[in-house]
Image 1: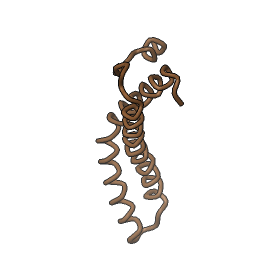
Image 2: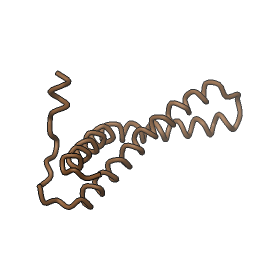
Image 3: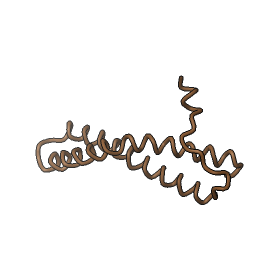
Length: 100
């Protein structure tokens, strides 16, 4: 099943699509991935910090950070997964053209 999923083409670029367009799309997809997966990592670290921090202002700051990163992570999880697949498609296209 997973081998069939890895062969699925999400987006087919035209043969005359310039390399600058492919690289720009790859950068865009990479930035979306960094935002989504980075928010998830900050959310997990904030949750751990909330559990071990003592009472006081630091716990309040950690709670606010945890709430905001949770919202961002929930909103960006699906786009980050799709952008990861998109970046892989662009890499395959660049490799198929024989470009670095």
